[in-house]
Length: 275
Image (cartoon, rainbow, N blue to C red; front, top):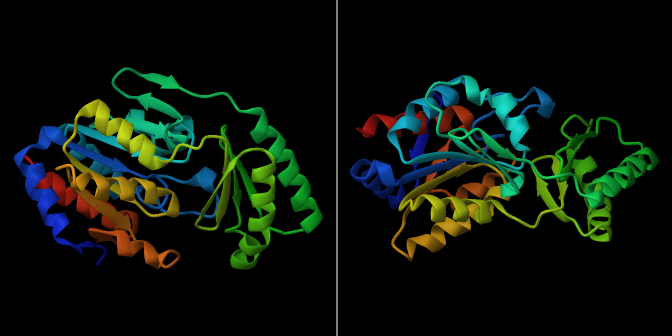
């Protein structure tokens, strides 16, 4: 049975605080690997049906629900079918680590322009891939970033190891930030992290009961922020969507969920406890 379990007392503290003051709750979530299963082709990603239902059920019961992702806002709106889902009329999407934003309440989207540095880096990556002759590598245009996916390579681990120093050199030459992830290397123009995006949302909403759900290295700055905020009296909960690819991430968790279906079960359990 797919499920979740509490790993630290913070999980129970969060549930109690959320039940006592639901309007003060902010639940933020990553998209890929957390709300949506990881797939070979990122263009075919979709929210797990149970996660979509649970998020829609939770949305009206808490102060704010948000998605913080490395993806462009427009892509998450499309893949998540956010405008079609009842209960998500107040969701905020922070795309590209917070460099862009969409607020469902107002319908306002603030997409950034593609920086010249990303365009130049993309050409350099394409040339490097042609020279290396690695089959199965897929490039994803994220606007302010370019993703190099190796999941479809015959040997993804070897391809990742081969491409990482190449990507690092190209990133440095163009003033970009290299963000490694699960079988993906991302070169992005913004130095913003998910921690920065989450901090901005907390300051905007005034939330004092905050959870972040994630599954990858890019979520670590947000997890670090939540641990820091505990010293300031904020009740926080770190939910890790566990996988065999990054088992060490579980060391950061207050709640361990068995993939997106487990995240859905945790969201549903939280919703059931709220008035």
